[in-house]
Length: 324
Ligand SMILES: [Cu+2]
Image (cartoon, rainbow, N blue to C red; front, top):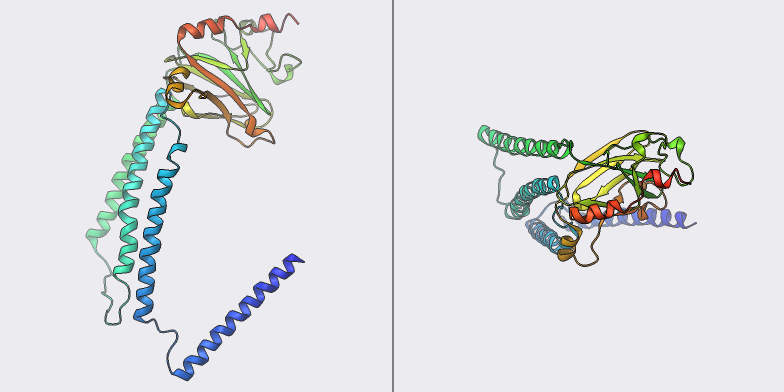
């Protein structure tokens, strides 16, 4: 019923507008004026509207940049993250310089060269110098930016992982579990078919390499030491997102993915700048189901001494799974 009424209102509005146009035409016949003719007064009105809307839009952009600035992430807490931030800064500076130079010109010229009765159009078909300038300059700038981007990407994705601590990050609807590879720094075999009772990751307890693995619900990392996260998923595609380290990687069932990084700031250092409530957190960045929003795990970055104390206090797979 409501839809029918809306349709009726739309139809009647169109009919009323057609009638208004018709009235206007009849009026122009009586007064002998062409209503379709664009007068200087119309041009002035439109020119001023261009100025108001264009500069209003610019003011709105500046207001948003100032108002929402505090919602941006704090500076990166990892080695490659600082490089990604640098790339982002260079790109945004270029974009903003071009935006703030061209947008006022666009709206101002629409006003300045608005139509006037006495004006005639200047015939301007082609200019080789202009064509060369607006082809060559963007080509050079964009090529430099793309090469810079590819090199940054390459360094972020292919770091030296030979002495990195290997940790598995396991995702399922709707939480995370982590597994340290233990003293041998090699993760034992695991298979979803072995998931049973307390063995939530399906670790193969017959695999010798699995004996020293440590399963935890909170990840601790030593500062300034490389870490290699290996991702697995039990059910659907999740996305491991560590915003402060600028790390994100999909966790795909049946596929192994990984991301290596080096944390550079301890949780305690971050608390000093970001407030006492600050914690590093791993989030899921794929809408993976009803409780997706609540899928998170705490990460703690600390001194090597504190890290060793913590890791030595954790129980190995051998101690937890085989003693059931
Ligand atoms: Cu998820």
